[in-house]
Amino acid sequence: MKKTTIYLLSLMLLAGCEKNFDPNIYGTLNSSNFPATEKDYESYAMLCYTPFTTTWVYFIGSGYNQHSMYIPEGGAVRLFDATSDIMAPWTTGWGGEWLRFSMADFSNCRYYYRGNSGADHLNHFQKTAEVTRFTEIIGTIENAPDEIFHGDKKRNLIGEARLCRGLMMYYLLHMYGPLPLITDPDDVHDQDKLNDMERPSLDEMCKWITDDFEFAIANMAENVSEQGRYTADYARFCLMKHCLNEGSHMDGYYERGMELYNELNNGKYDLFTSGTNPYADMFKIGNKFNREIIMAVSCSETGNGEGNSGNFWPFMMLAVPTDAAKTDADGNPTPFALQGGGWGQNFNVSPEFYATYEDGDLRKDVILTSYWSTNGYEVNDSHLGSRWDGYIINKYPIETETPFQGTDYPLARWADVLLMFAELDVRLSGSAPSEEAKDAVNKIRHRAGLDDLSDEDVATAEAFLAAILEERGHEFIYEGQRKIDLIRFNVYARAVYKVKGVTPTHQYMPLPDYAVDQAKSLGKTLTQTYLRPGWTEDLANIGSY
Image (cartoon, rainbow, N blue to C red; front, top):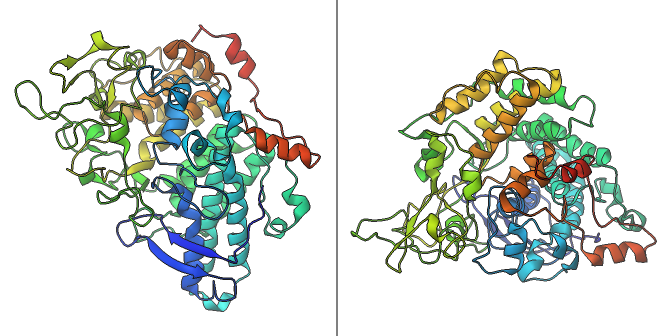
């Protein structure tokens, strides 16, 4: 980890780009004159949003350029969807890390360095230093004079910063397993603490995340005027997700998850049900921040990936084949009429995963099983393995004639709250689901045009959990969740093998060699890989999923 200072800062408010949550650029500042006013402290707190934006790369003084958690090229969809059973191996593409990650091959991660290009952008271990930076920011605001703030502003800002820090730790946990982190402002400049580069226990890191989320819930604003700025309800959602993921080994977490469901079930949110296919329409630009959306990355069609242009959404450039035509053989516009071909279909939908959808499931409509090529023919199943490896995910459709789309990236939806509630119900009771749990899942199925779960699906806890996992895969495809879900159900290795025909090299990404070597030079042992309990069992049952 790296000691962080604030003597020379170039601060950028990058968290959103619409509805008053716009980027603001600040010049070179130093600790003698910044922060001083309430506005200064707010700008300082907003630095914590930077890793949760969608720009090509960002830099906040804690290392080299980094990919944000949500930029498709190196964020959640690549880390947690492309490496799961959703995507077929990208054998017709560019090779390198794109192929390796699509095959759940993380063996190359140990060789990543602190560089600025290529595969090193996937080295998120550098974000451990950003946790230290966030801790410093939190301490600075805590020590600020109370009299310069109006109302609850001070505790609101600390709550936002702690939610961002909790999110950073949450994602790092699901990338690498438990990591050594600085969470006490008094330790930021303590060299002994900074040199303590040994993994904490899973329970310890889970508690750090929980503490930040709980503080955020108690101190953040319930409502904000800027779309894309975090709220107390988003903190509740994050903690509910964390409690579900970790409830198997953390006492009281399933119970706390249920409490959070009741807090979120406040009448503000519901499933989006407008249009002939509400699921597909929900993600369109005209339906941004609809009633289902608890939080999203607010993007603009004028964004271009540069830090001063706000958030943008380049997903479809990475989802559309290079030779996708704007019109078909009869001159009719295709779904790509406003864009044309992409960069090579870096993301696809595995035909094997597509086959798990039920007949009549409206969610299938966001997946295209053929396309018209600029070479003058239709690409279909007969071309799998030659022209393409899997189907096109059209969940974030091309709606404007701009280089990139202004589609928002969903972070928290009411559908997720319902499915988490249903899962918590069974994990708490250990028996067949309650009527309320069944109803929660069936509401989502009805929105997708499907009937209730079958009697067989709700007969036992095991059957119901299996049904929920399948629903989650169909509902949240390419929303950056799948690998985390599969690990929670302890079927990651089996699910990947079933679709990709390969076994993941690791459950979590190995730490880079330089970090392990640095720890060794300090007399510490930083274990390169981490395995949750149950991984051996998952591997032992390859072929049985």
